[in-house]
Length: 572
Image (cartoon, rainbow, N blue to C red; front, side):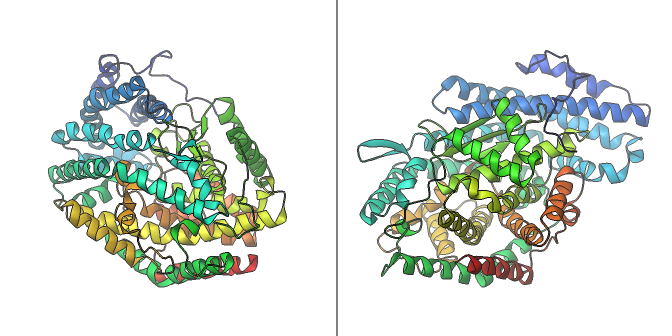
């Protein structure tokens, strides 16, 4: 039986009351590990457990510093605490981490470790050794701090609607309003507010590119894209696979996106569909309002998860009891949403900017899927075993969006509203692919051409954006807004190259949903089995345990798109 009664990892090496405060307090533990003599396989495995214990404590401390800062970007003390870790602790820790990695791979007993159990872990350790360069330590520390400036800049963005101040996330709900003139007014206000900081975001991104490129050059790579593929552990697919994915999206997804937008245009009775019409409902149809407060969102999600699998709901209740949620949008809070695994506590933290919209439900069940992944993998022996590839992490979240749809009546008592919610979700499953391809292709170009000018970047962005557009949405007169559309994508600033994972994982999630439609219990068991393995298997192996094929070919994508399209047609 699965239990959400998660226990904090027991400490045997660190003192019980140890907290990360200064490097001087932390360093002795690393010195002890580095100097310890290892004379047997048993001693090596104990050494690995002790090292894992330190890694978990340090990782959790860093996570809490980031969580607190994103929850309140206006508090300078929280920002300073995060910066202190990045500038004073992390840089001093990295040489020790490299030395410990080298101690592990050179130890005579490492060859005796169970290769099936340790294969992916040791592969990752060797990769870290290959990438480590002393001269990159200060640059990476600087990057950690700089990347968070995106949240600081965007956290201050608000607009006024009908005399009231709203964050951009809160203001977005007006884009569902019947009043087309109000929708346009709010859309333009949001875009104009973004324009006020476009230079700051351009400059921040340019500075990040310079430093990232230097990190790659120092490590002996031709460009940062190639460096990042290695750092992200993309052992099972290449940049050429990404290009094939881009082409498959154009071939097999864009026609469905065009169909969705034409249907929307007819439903709204419009001669031309504008960007502020995408989320709108026809006259007489109220926008979906699945909840009003963060507490209601959490309660309804728990109820939904209880019906799907009681263990899933228990995970959320455990997090709630630990106060591991910050759900509602407010001024001064960083944008976006995330589930942050906490290596020592086990129960993760969910952060989001809920404003009472349908998209918030999707975000909540998405992050809930990530949270369940954290619970399922917490009992694995080493922290390194819990570092699973993002391409399976996002299957955990995206499959949960699709699995949970059958139980969304907890959010919608009205059958018509429930049907509209499902239709909205399936539209989103399809329409996200072109954006994923756009962001990914843009990043390839950015880092293959790191000395580009802002003008060249803008020109290339618009070119790629047009490549993945259908032409159904009328964008005339909005060219200035489109030129900086990439600036709203947090990943470009904070987690470079982490985006195609969403596309790969969406394919996996659709595959699991196909299983679920045939045999719900078997699909959920496959899901649980795969997530429980953490990162102890290769990506294709994890997909196989989930009953999936790791396949980015246009033929496979075509099959999955046809399935989603048939499910959509069954709803209409």
